[in-house]
Length: 110
Length: 237
Image (cartoon, rainbow over all chains, first blue to last red; front, side):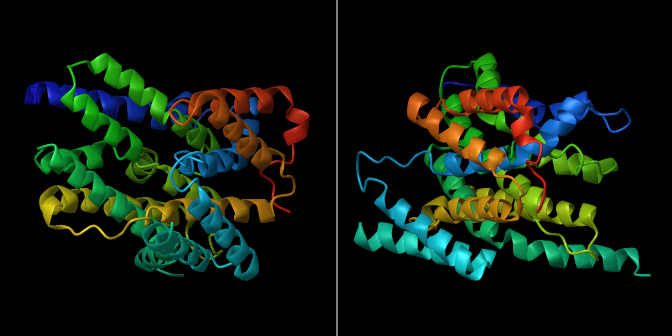
């Protein structure tokens, strides 16, 4: 390893600092004791559904439809989750069935 | 009147089932992370402290590469800001809900992850359960899963047999279910569709490594310029 332990610590500290800035910044800019601007209140309401949509895409970002299994196991597992969840509306059941389906597909089938 | 102790236990009991998919996903991913660092010759203290202090999966994996490259703290800092910029969105979304005073409030913000955010943002917390404590326990449980997995992977890396291929899909499945729950309860789908559509578009254009920042900018721009379309976004039916 080329770096010293001291340099490791500094590097890790920079990653910690960067991460904490992204987590704390909104709360520091808009503290509880001051009224939050109307625009930010609007974003606070309108942003969550869009963030959840972004997360869905983010969690599937590494699926490559041109190589390997071409995203077919993911597609089947996603459809499984959608169908089971629309049918039973039980979060844990939908996640468990979807995950097991996916594991079976990538381990034994595709 | 229930005592404070009863309030806390009740909140912990309500929170735990919500975190089970994360238990599966985090323990798997964090053990993999510990093994990964172990394989590159890092002592288990590295994954342990990095998980305790950074507590952000993607950036932790990236940081392993940084630790083995040439010393460049500024690059580490900027890269971290870019990878974790999405937390800004979560912060703005949780400004109201995370107004919990004291250490507990600081811990909610310190340990906000994709998974913790998505649960605390959308969970239907029963009327008789204290919301602050509920969110605290969701956050705490998830944090413990992640840190303990990292320690286990770092310590016993070589010994763990790997036949859990595909288990990481638990996380994807959870995001889909949470998205569906939001979809089924909201009055207007404009914001959900915007998030899904723009991210997908940016993923196609910019690729998986660079699509988050352009997606965030476009989502913010459209939410800001077309407010009339999103007035009912986030409201329940």
